[in-house]
Length: 240
Image (cartoon, rainbow, N blue to C red; front, side, top):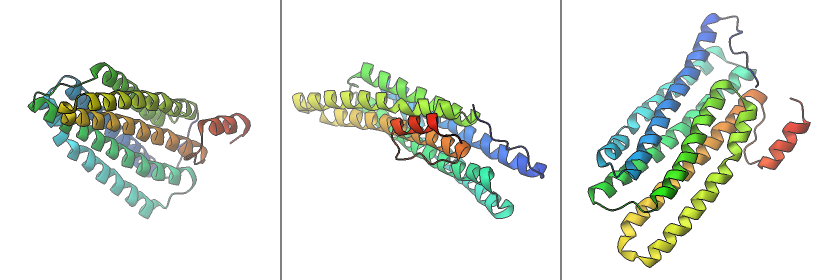
């Protein structure tokens, strides 16, 4: 596991500011995780009240994003950070953007879950949705853990799990499309479920982004738009 020495500045106050920002990001991550979990539960259990709670709580995530972003701007203006400190600030700004978007996807699931519950429409393919949701929740949790520990090796392995999520999502999408053609009476419900599955797949994509930011933060290497095979080959042959 790699380590950044973010506590070795002449100014003790600067150390405190950097650690506070990291702590706020992790708190935001915890809130987003909770939202995703509740959104999925509301969908699977047809819990309209929980769905509405998720759909109306997105402002909390948005407020955290705005606050952390302002903290980063203040540090850029006052401290003029360089090297790993600058990478940390850039990474934080990127991570909170992805977390805010994950919150949006959770809000979407909560809204659709409440609409399905209110109209007494059944949620098709509960088993498949539960499995996809479990993969996504695990990936998000582990991506945030890799960020907390600045663990590059873990981040790369976690990002590779997106292939499993995509495969699961594609299978579920085909099943829903087939069901849609066979039973057009349930078009509204099936479309909502399809959009929820898409929301889960997008959360997986944002989790991959967080993993990529961990590599950038620790190694100074931007691996976006790079295949997993290329990343593996580079990290096994190149010294940073």
